[in-house]
Image 1 (cartoon, rainbow, N blue to C red):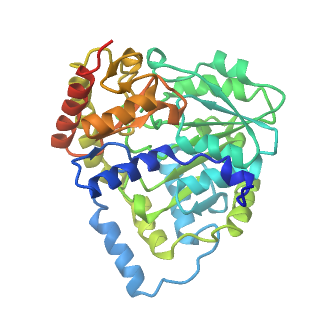
Image 2 (cartoon, one colour):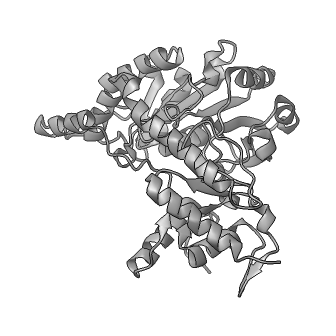
Image 3 (spheres, helix red, strand yellow):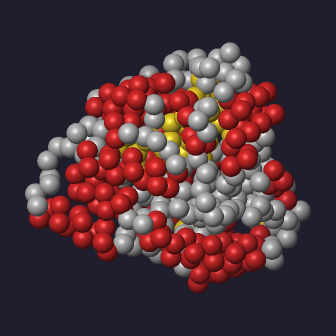
Length: 398
């Protein structure tokens, strides 16, 4: 009989982190593995942000912080929401957390009761489903595909809602598909959601600044649904600050207070040094993020063009983030030596062991027909990566 709790036994390991770990293990054994498995910009944190952290250390800003965040940072985030998103959140409606992942956990654990349903469009970020499990909620997924640009329709959403539905969780720009909802699409979804007075929206907008379409759109911008939306963001992706671990929410006051209470029993306030660094990032003109955004767009176009040379792959044109999520089901049923490809996990392990390239299987994101490429690495490594994929896939026969 296991001494571990059912909770941890039933919790799946993050497959993105698992693949990154497997890649490091193989690299340690001397294998030439290129990893495109982790969602992390390969750029350095801008110098002005690092300088702010150094100054915070020199000024001895090294003590416990308020649970919801340093007041100056919460005020700056409030101003950022108004500046960039036309959202009116007061500083008291902001909660700063140890990464957007904690922000998401705070929200779900604060709002979802056992047995309540949470709608999650497919593909989804890996931790949504497992966090819903922790809350003892029930995830109700809505399938999409390449043809629909991996976006749900209002009709699909309407059909998924039941008397037990408490929340919908989605990201735009999306990890793993890179899809971006435009203003009209968000408005159409909001018109469905507002019909149900007990239905809330968790809008994950962590990839806001990596958006190739132009202006980012937030679903909370529509006044009629504003009180039902919790907006999640952070500095990890747009400012290449993944290791600093700072995420935040803007929410109706009663929800932000609940998230502060939840966080107070887990981690308390986020790192004081990281918060002072994040303060400089948040206050900066978003134009400082454009160099990285433009590099990602160039890489996206490079990888899409290279993937066209591989038979059977179907892709959308992702308008944000730094992922491509091609449909690879063409290769199901094919084999090479002792490898038989029945699903996306089979294919990802085959590419790792035969092609020396680490990708994440689509089943981690709810879509077993796909596989995720992260193009957050140099153009040279991307060219080599797709070459390895192409060579390995060419070995597969019927």
